[in-house]
Length: 287
Image 1: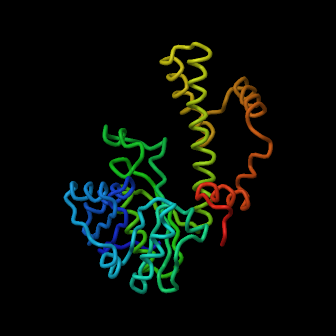
Image 2: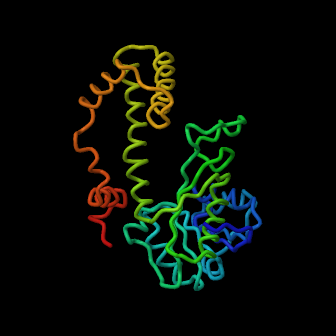
Image 3: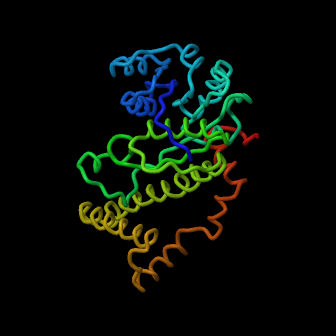
């Protein structure tokens, strides 16, 4: 993928929101010409408090090379319907989550490129070197992370624009991995939210059960759970060490007791559609 040191005009829609502030904080440290757009009074105040100048949406997107829609999924449809018609030919509209793009909820134009990007977040195996990196579990502040991106264009200049923006908004970025919009939707939500985040929540429920039902001191239960979670991930995903024979038997018991035999159905296209329809509060996905 082509990278560039060129600077661009970037409009951030929703600049004062939760994700918008993260994006804006990083873009403010670049040489790009950034336009900050925010409608909510609280978001406008946060933007002003950060020392940034607010711009109305229409002039902000009119000459922007790339428009970043840092708004909630449920707002992407109406926001894109309002702004995409105002964008200049050859520009890029970038969303930060694939759900609405994959579901076909975004307004599109033949002469405006659609792109999606999502942070990987700092890896559990990242070699952190400073207290700031250890404190940055989400990414985008101090701890390096990868990012996943999809762009509906084979033009190297467009790809370079998207990569430069992705590296800026999620900085510091190690690698940008390129996939299709559908593949990005299969990664997020299926792989990371439906499975990984669910397992994280299950671990917390298990900790609560050990403490509240079994009466184990919380410090002891938390300590052994956190340590063994790292070992489990390292052994399973990195192949660092083999599990013991006894552990393998316990793992089989856990799989038989907890996991449904057909759990891999969540990777099917029809199940992805069902999942996204629930997330986007739709009767069904229409493409």
